[in-house]
Length: 213
Image 1 (cartoon, helix red, strand yellow):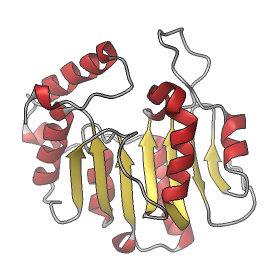
Image 2 (tube, helix red, strand yellow; image 1 turned 90 degrees about the horizontal axis):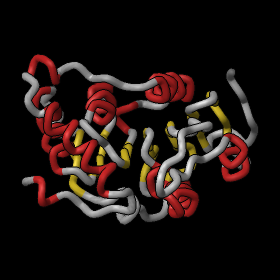
Image 3 (cartoon, one colour; image 1 turned 90 degrees about the vertical axis):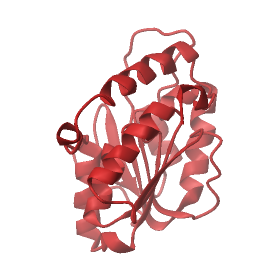
Image 4 (cartoon, one colour; image 1 turned 30 degrees about the horizontal axis):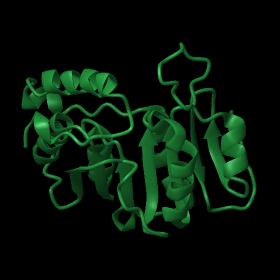
């Protein structure tokens, strides 16, 4: 796998090139450095939600779209979850696979090269889907893809999301941020485990809202 294997996506090439350079630099790190897994708050809330729901991670199948350096996928894999990841940049996939090998998670975590928008999701195919700081880069496909993601989550499953960070500096083309109001409209009937100014985690499990500030 080399840089030319990068998958062409809706996100402008200049933005993707910047992230690709970052992952290429991270590939120079030692195994001791890469064993560290940096995850964001939605993942912590997800862990709490799984525990609250009494779900055994070993029976939980997760899809992570735009899996990046593999930190989140490996973190969930170490908890016992089965994780499939999709990532468009070959350097990120190489980095993620190094992490998978370092943590001996080959039997639970798989990260493949692919387009987060073009990846076939199916209907009720996953227990949970994770999308961290990436869905907005689908631009005019952001909301349609969001709805496809919801359709791919099994009843009782979770949507783990981060990316709602308005206001934001102007970009060309404009990033398509999802607002809290849009999330609440699209997720009518879902339980909100936690929602803040920049990130949210929600579940299909209970037909009411339970907001935690």
